[in-house]
Amino acid sequence: MATAVNEPEIVVEDLVVAFGDTVVLDGVSFTVNRGEVFVILGGSGSGKTTLLRNLVGLMRPRSGRILIQGEDFTAMSEEERIGFRRKMGMCFQSSALLGSISLADNVALPLREHTRLEESTIDIMTRIKLELVGLGGFEDYLPSELSGGMRKRAGIARAMAMDPELIFYDEPSAGLDPIVAAGIDELIRTMQSTFNLTSVVVTHEMESVKLIADTVCVLHRGKVVGIGTLAELELSNHPYIQQFFARRPDDPSTVDEAWARALTGTD
Amino acid sequence: MLDLLGRVGRWTFDQLAAALRVSVLMVDTATWLVVAPVRGRGFRWRSAVESLVEFGLRSMPIVGMICFLVGVIIALQASYTLDQWGANRYIADLVAVSALRELASLMTAVIIAGRCGSAITAEIGTMKVNEEIDALEVMGVNPIKYLVAPKFLAMVIAVPCVTALAMLIMIAGGWASAVLVVGVETQIYLDQTVNAIVVKDLVNGMVKSFFFGVVICWVGAYRGFQVEGGAEGVGRRTTSSVVTSIFLIIVVDLVFTVLFYFM
Image (cartoon, rainbow over the protein chains, first blue to last red):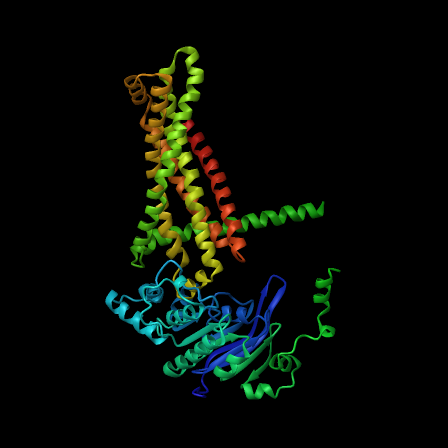
């Protein structure tokens, strides 16, 4: 599986993200190597989606740095970011295809926006990208006419439109049946190996982690609690990692006091 | 007391922050509408034309219907008083002046705010909920350029155009009831109408309708980008989009009415 070379593509240093007084990410640091599939694993509310939004620049951190290909992404102006983002593709949890235009137009949108290619060239490129994700022949369909799995695939095709070097997936297999989810996992792996894409995947599905991950980073309450290959993490003695991997529910006696108070309404 | 002071302060800050966001939206729209196309960064003409058809052409039946009825109503209400002095021919003056200076532009703006302002909010809001706005940003497509600028252009063209038509139809409505119900002669009605109208009245109505269009589009877009959460958020912002639009339309109306009164 390891096609990765030890060349850092993304370096996150001591990232702190907060909404008002609520600290969502607290001193997160890790390195993603070029060409690997890096999985950010965590439960609901662990801050993993927030982390991803910071990596693609939809949010700015309170402090800390994100270096992408050696350049400080956090310090860039909005203008520079827009240029830099052409190297990055992102697949959203809800696919986020524009509902009012066809699949082909969705995939062609970044090409029309950023390149001066002829319409006939764009047409061919769009077909290639859709073929790549197994959606050849669906060019003229509207997103609402497709199943969830097909929309996910179309989202990947759109993320691939500009031939990115990095690709980010937000919960790619969430809400899909196991067979379709496995298909998406396979696609993520194919994309990575065919184009040597650096892929960052946010997920909470252990099944897909087993299939796709080169490196796994476990996030819990805004902190990295473990990082390494899946085999390494399975040997970890961190209670949360053990609990997560064993799929055990929270022990009621260890539930946070604040949470208990919220439940019982005694503030 | 301190609590009250704190609340007033927080409210003021919130309003200032909102004003800042509105200003940013305004500047961005203007930039993407005027500066960017000149620099060759593109403008979505097709989308603007589609919006123009939606805001303008498709609004015409309902605006026409309502304005005709309003014309009928004003003429009858006017006759109620004017009849006592045997001055029914002045119904024409009253209908023409109120249509041109006030009612045609106001009715049109209120209907388009309800029909299209709400649609803008719902569209942008739903896109925000579905992460489509985020997707645009990640792709390096400015959401203001993609969504707001074409709609803005369409709106400031559509509202004055529909208003012009509404003026005519309202006068026709007044004519219908004055001639058919009250019994004014058509020739007299037409002469009175032509004599009553001055260019200033027309300019008054058209200038206002342009700014009504500006208000409807910006409020619609602003409320759309404010949407948080899910379907419920879209519903709430869509309601407040219409309410805010109509309120601001009345405020703008007042400002221009005062302005033209002293001119």
